[in-house]
Image 1 (tube, helix red, strand yellow):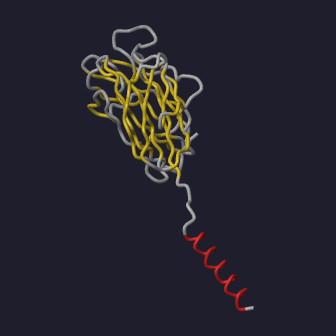
Image 2 (image 1 turned 135 degrees about the vertical axis):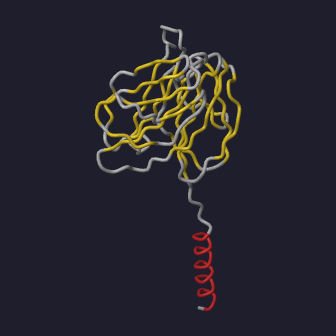
Image 3 (image 1 turned 45 degrees about the vertical axis):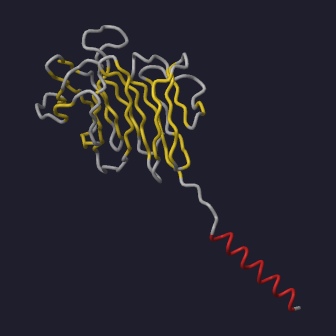
Length: 222
């Protein structure tokens, strides 16, 4: 009887120890945005593993993917396998990140931006602006006929935090020493988050022409 009791007690201790040391996977999220016309189709490699079955084309982006929180090896390669970006990033617990490839004076660069999807409530939305145009100089951004500058003196590679904007149909004006661009009407939905970036070249009328590209996200990482 004493031996059985000792065995039972040992099993309880072992089970408790296992419960104490149980590992819980902590997740982070990453998405990829291809804003680099010079790179063509590209793919993201995380810890040397190719992520997308099909290469991501210019002005395309992925949904968020989950990864266990850790330091990760990041590579971005073009369709021919040429290495464009070789770095490492540390993914923080329960955080989301956008990895963005873009052109800067015909050089390929990247940005890692942490996402903060904090709801606004009411009928407003949030917009973040990035200057990713290859050759546009410093720009200011206004909305509709309002002369208030919402994003002032943004240069290539600059980005803003999310800023509250009214929902509904609006257009944006981008002005600078070599830029005078009016974006077409955009329907902004209440409660949504928008990544709006300036892309392309000022003197082009092709696929890499100057313009604004808008990505909508509802805050649920889809």
